[in-house]
Image 1 (spheres, helix red, strand yellow):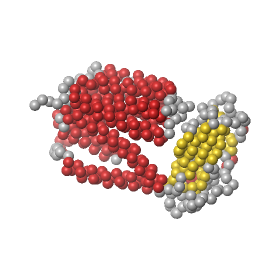
Image 2 (cartoon, rainbow, N blue to C red):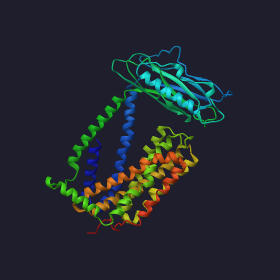
Image 3 (cartoon, rainbow, N blue to C red):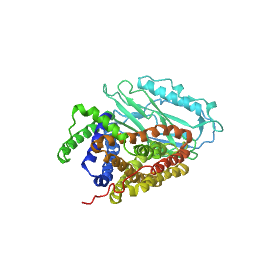
Length: 485
């Protein structure tokens, strides 16, 4: 799939360059990126929503658990998970059974070592359950002497409830359970046991769901968890089959509407042609500065991109914003895409009006300066969803506008390549990917070392090389402008 995708990407880029003159390429670059982003919305948003709808529709009725964190006067309580003496029968069969529909958890802490041991025990318990074995319930406990509140490394107080099926499913039929927060306090979090696959051999084995309060939670609060079941394989199978049919219809449509561009290459000239293309690309005047520009223009953004979602999802104790997954999906999948698309359209229109060179500095500022909103969010950790969405909107608008310069510069370099336009553009997309991949690979390690606050300051320092490279690249003032007859 990756090979087919890369091959199609190169062919599509080459077709775009070969079919349009420089002004048309500039004019349509924003529209081209807009439809790319719309496809991202469809693939990462609408398709996922459809799969989720099919999954829920193919499963059992959802169940809910209310967790209430309450202050207590006692500072040392034993902790031990308890299996129910009798599972409450469901009203319909089959049905998902849970040991509790509401629980309370004290606002206390336990030692980090004890919590880690408990979490490992839960993982082992659920692994045995998946194999049709029930482990010793005594393993899911913490002795009183290991509960601490005054000193040492702390973890929030744990809680465990169990769930299972009410009756045996049909042979070879599997039922997947997913547990997530549906509403309420974000500092009551799920640790383990939120995903399990039941079948006809393990349907009656209790699965342990481990949750906890975060130490930063000091006041009484509650949240609701939802237990959803469904056929994931069926859901994604139907969605991907529908997409396959859709792309087949697109291919038929394109046979009739795309302009005809014929090119033939003799088989014996393929090797020599590739060699000559390679030689000419690296022999271009100023190509070293061009490559460095491609590698460094998004040096800050390449690191920010990898950590933006984890920052939104991580707890406030870890330096993040503690948002729900659905909130992050809304911010990036809806608000972010809208403003990213708007920035790309504006960039394409302005570049076609005044030319790339005229806007190059402003576009470089636009893609880099808005990264400062993450410095603000990491220091102040706002909880208002609209403030966070506004920050992301500013950053994505600037990114869409500034990325136009990046795409057009690649087109500009390829435009002077004669018969090797497509090959040279493919080389540049490789450098573009490299410029995102290498810093992105290291960004997680850098963030863990620095923490979010210093990491986002580092990201903004990494935008400086992109500005420096503007001094070394050359762009024709009339590139992108409509040529007079």
